[in-house]
Image (spheres, rainbow, N blue to C red):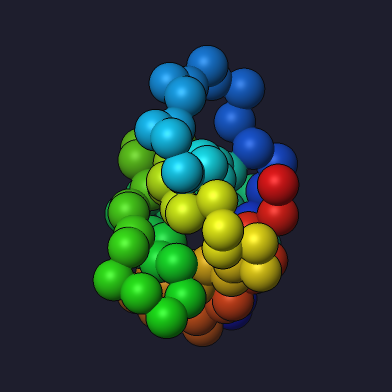
Length: 86
């Protein structure tokens, strides 16, 4: 089973510091259930976070990283690489 990325959460978030942008979203399984504690890493770096109780994450990445990809991993699931987007 592969982890999937759903629509970004509707929570208000603090702005990113100068030189960074915020990537956020929600990680769910193929039935739409949130994956609590899934890791979300900026590919090729040690920058990352884990999802909260509703599968949501928020990650600050450098603005200059326009081709950013996120690696999503969760125990028992196949890791997935996704475009970070806007």
